[in-house]
Length: 472
Image (tube, rainbow, N blue to C red; front, top):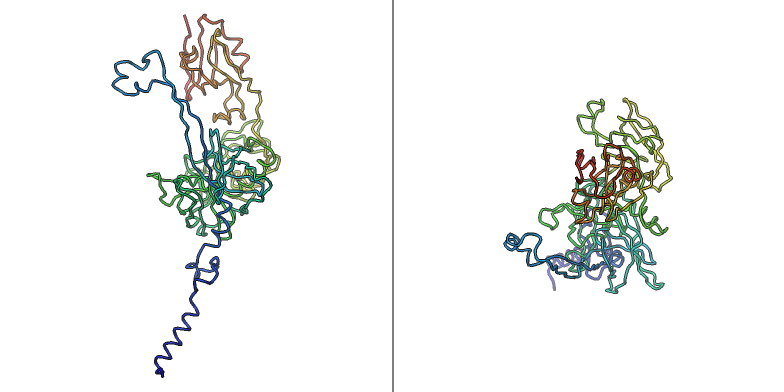
């Protein structure tokens, strides 16, 4: 017969055992801080089937003289080398991740994952592989949308969350294919929202997270504990190439807008253009405007025929918010403007001479007036080898030039051509020829003499004006 002491210990053990989860008990998502020791497995099981691996390949042709890459040989033979060049062909492969957004096979990934690819393969979590075609891309936001043919099968997808609802400290999971080792899940928190940084994409306010994101995770999913997509992992801050706990994701709110454009048939993204220069309000600017603290973006130059002018914005105005969302730098302004399609008005809260007011701004694309009129000069012309075009806000934006610049820009220069020997480079602006101003392509053609005759040309390059003589 057991003693009372032994019986008491047995009762305590039974009571304690009843409070411990057994291996057979069903796992569930933590719903309180006290339950964090439980598993994220239910979320992972729901999310993983919709996260895919992406393999790309492209054919690369290398021309040159490989043996002259040796510095010593180059010193003796010079850069010209022997007359017969060699040519090598090779295939470059890269890996990334993506997320299924529609059951009929639309996948979102990063543009840099599939850029310049000749072939794109999407591999599902069950290892089935599909050839993919590009639907649409947004280079400035680093997003690309692909389509695979599932032959009528309903594919698993992730629901898009409202990324604006995220708060610093929220738990998130990152799912992707880091270093090509296979699908991997990491956990962390939201470290910051509305984050922008030099070197990252324009017009995006990123979600920052400390969930480990490594090479190969690009294009993968950042999800909340309900298994909803809150962002697309795109970049890390690192001094070594590996994760140090500073990763960035493109918010789901922007993905939603770009997805709608992609499935509607838009190949390229048309984004709203303000028609004004913007800069962040720092401490000095805030003091000069009698603002209690730095916030918003300051309006600089205003294009006379753009959306800003139509809305009545003036140089010196401070834009505080767009459609209720605060803006603190030009990137966050561009992001807020991109969350609604063109033609939808934006409600701006602005500060003018110390008084706050609301203005309505039309969302319109940058104008392409005048038309580019791309013109390439042939071998018997004075600018042989050069391709020039008329500048306009829309054309300049696509080339990454100052949208306010006008005139004629050099778009391309053929190596070894007369234009190359003039040291013309893409981005140079032709200001005048033989003293005549050249505001458009036709005026350049009219001012140029016949090939072989000397002339003087004025060119703006890198913000500086140069004048030089050609021929003679």
